[in-house]
Image 1 (tube, rainbow, N blue to C red):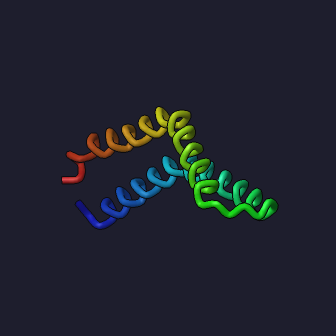
Image 2 (image 1 turned 60 degrees about the vertical axis):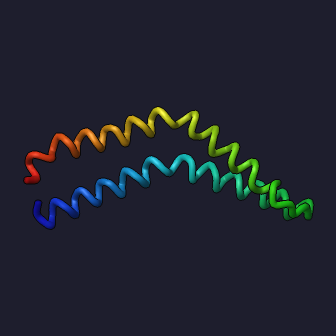
Image 3 (image 1 turned 30 degrees about the horizontal axis):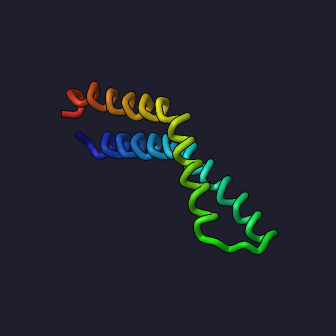
Length: 88
């Protein structure tokens, strides 16, 4: 395996991770922002008020996007295994 091949595989792996994690992170950030705005306007600063909705939002996003995430990671793994003989 050459250095360029290793860099290419690493770049594709990082891109795949970012694409797969984006829905959960985006939804979690949006819910966190909304909760922060709510806490700032009502002056209620309870830790569970910020934590529980974010956890529920991430669970819902995993239920919604889980199949797509699995297919994306499985596709990356399949391409990596198929290209493995050419790397030797």
